[in-house]
Length: 90
Image (cartoon, rainbow, N blue to C red; front, side, top):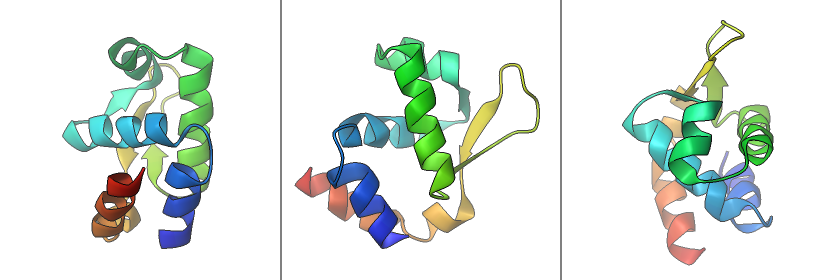
């Protein structure tokens, strides 16, 4: 997970926005539209970031299709310290 976090947050252009998404999901679950509105990021970009975070096991989604909520995974929770360390360097 640590390597995935480095890649997602520091190794690609969208790292800052992915970190912002993680911080919002840490407060409470949200759907893509809510993230789009709160972050002021294009909806398609939010979907791209969510897909990347989900593919790397950082977040998971609920089962419903419309208004699908996203949550941080337990796996991410075990690596929260690495997340904080990486975001200090980004």
